[in-house]
Length: 549
Image (cartoon, rainbow, N blue to C red; front, side, top):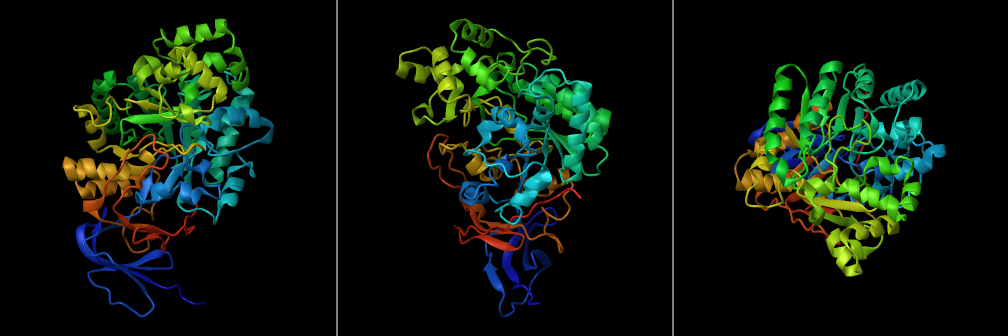
């Protein structure tokens, strides 16, 4: 058999867990790192990359993504190009309790109403189980993929949108989770802000995490039950689940909603550090920007649509019903535990304000980039009526942008609490991008990792380049117990990014139709295949599925 052509990266400055700005050459053969030495003599036929004055590091791991919804699409290489130009070689999908598997055709209507806002275009399901999903995308993905099982998706299949989980449904849910784990999942994610996740009790989650703990490398990741009035209670719940089950816990996109909750970041960090001292393995990830995106339905209290999206959209045409919804939105203060009665985890109007809630993705492009106040003025109605019109016209599937996530507005004069959260050693970083069919997406889809380097390494100097790279790579890999990615060592998979530190920066433009790609990444290798060369993307489908074996 003909030996694959070697790739030699010479004269680079290596930065990783193993190296602190060390000048070395790296040899790649057969998709893996074959050697790292001070000097490696070139051989005829090798592909030689001169990395003089460039940093050579492991490829970055995006610890929280929804890429499971985009990888089956033929156009996904172009869609995900923005994350590749940040240096990402591996992404974790199935987050926030929402996964693109398992899919049971007799539950499609419920599944679509639950996770339809994540679709770039109409879904074409050709799988039922996780195993079938992975088979479907295998060999045809541009980035490595690590799967999680979505608690909410499985609960919809086993129990619909019913609040109470009966014994039979609970047994089905446990079996489904075990099947996903047996088929390669690294753990389970929960989305406790979203229905039906919001209905689940702490005991239900503990019961499921006990199943996870039977698997050596399993992790529980959670979109917490509250990021505003019940933020600290939600952090404590995640800690309790870890303490009661022994499973490792990852809190997703930790930053609270609204500028009034900044001081709670310090308290949350104290709770997490104390839990670790007590033996609970718990960490968190954060967005690099003070904004977030989610379904427009997050603006609506769960009781209003617990009988399904279709009925809700009919009901809000009635002024009496819609009046009750608006009254609740403008008066309700979340309480703990939020799953009791007509509880609600986060009232976005209360914690962020009408003026900070914008339409990000919609079929009607006239809505995009506008808050409901402005949409109302343009239509001659008030903001409340504007919300109703957007809900009905977009069939509840619009994507919303929330300014002020993480306790401040981007680039405000005082980002003290947000910066403290980003700089804390427990923090890794997330892209968490939703790619809407209208073309708009959040700035973190285009600049998360460059922004961390630009703001905290180059400008503020509060994180060293070695610390930043470790958080992007080995620390993220350690959370999922992935051993051979995220490192520069012989035998590791050759997922490598070569970047120009001085030129590494982002160009955030929230509502741009075609936002500018971040700069700085010169080369990107995935499994030893060159995907970006001299800042040019070639579309090579070099990604592999990473299973929890």
